[in-house]
Length: 487
Image (cartoon, rainbow, N blue to C red; front, side, top):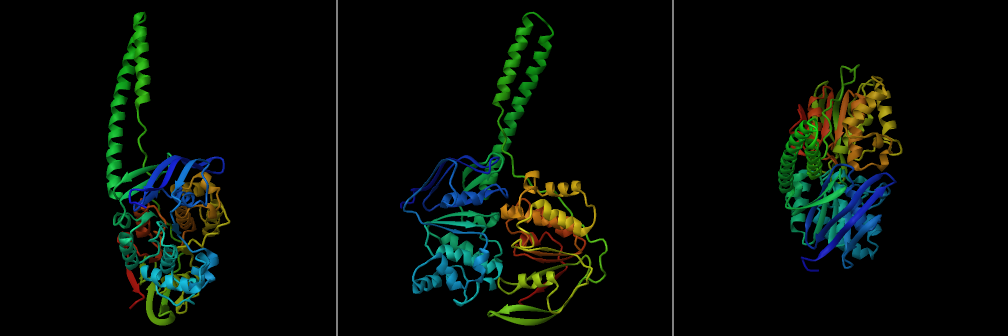
C-alpha cells in the first residue's frame, strides 16, 4: 500500500445504543496509510465504539465504513480479559494467535522485547502488575505485525520508563496507528493528526497536527464564532429597538417594523453554533470519617517481587491523620499488591484500627460491583458512612462527576472505563473514609478532570496512600512521606 492510500473511510456513519442514546451521528473521516492519529473526546463519548466499528465487532446503523481488504488490524485494549488471567504467557499468545507453538515462541521473543517485558513462558498472566499487563496487551497486538495498530489507553499503569519505551516504539513504528489516550504529552510525541469525537454533536472533527495544535486551532475558532455572534446580537437588538419604535407609529411605519422583524429573523438564522468544550467535573472535597481513630496505620515490613520471587523487607512507616504517603517503584515490584493487602487489612507487618473506614480506589475498578447500577453503588457508600443519607445529596454528588440521571440508572459494567473512574471518586465522597488508598487514580480519566481531582486529594484531611506514575499529577498533591520499594 502506498503512503497516500486511504485505508479506512467513514461516510455518514451513525450508531446508537438502545433507542435513545446516540453515540455517532453521520460521522465522516478518513485514515491514510502511515498516519499516526489520536482519537480524543470526553469520557463515555464513544471512542472505544469507533474502534469496535473499525474492526467489525459492531456494525453501523446507517452510513458506510470502507476498510482496505489488504489491511491487517490489531487492537490493544485497556484491560486483560478476566478469563485470561489464569493463563500462562505462552498459552495467552497461543489463544489469540493459533499457530504452531514454535512459531508463537519465535514471535514472542520479538514482541516482548519490543515492549520491554521479559518473563518465562510459564509465567501466569495474573502475576503481572498492571503496567506489565499493559505491555502484554500491546505485545499480543504486535504479534500480527498489523498495518493498523489500535491502542486504547496504552499508557495506563505504565511507569515513566515504560511510557518512554512505548513512545519511542511508536515514533519508529512504520505503519498506521490510532491511539485513544488522555495523555496529551504522550500523544504530542508521535501523532500527526487528531480525530476529536464531540460528545455534544456526536460527530468527529478531523484536524492536522498534534493535540496542542488542535487546542490552539479550536480556541481561535471559538473566539471567531463568539465575535460573529456578538455582531449578530448587536444587529438583532438594534433592529428590535427600531421595530418596536416604528410599530407604535401606525400607518406605513408598521410595514417598516415588519421588515425590521424579517431582518431580525435573518440575523438569528445566521448565528453560528459555537463549539462547546467538554465539561469538567465540579471541584469537590472528600470528607473525612467523623469518628477518626487516633492511630491510623503502622507498617513494620512489606513484600516486593524480585526476579519473580517474593522478598520481605523491614520498614518503619507510621501514617497519622492528615499525612499523605506516596509509594513508588518500577512496574512489577509489587506496589498494587502491597496496597491491596493494606486495604484488606491482610498485609503482614501492618496494623490498622478496627474502626478505620478505608476508601480504596483500585486501578481496575474491581472494588465496584459491575452488576449494580450507579445509584445502588452510591447508595451503599452513603449508607456505610451513615451521614447525610438523602437522595438529594446522592444526585448532587453524582451530577458533580458528570453522572447524569440517565447514567445513574445504568449498570457499572456498561459504562466506559473513564465513567467507572468518576463513579469511583463519587463513591469516595459519599463514603467519607478515614484512610484513602489510591492506585493509579489518573487511569482512563479525561485530562480536563485531573487538576480538579489533584486539588481534592491535596486538600484531603485524612490519611492517604497514593500510587501514581504521573509526575505532573503527583506534583499538584501534598506528599509528606515517600516509601520507595526499590530501596
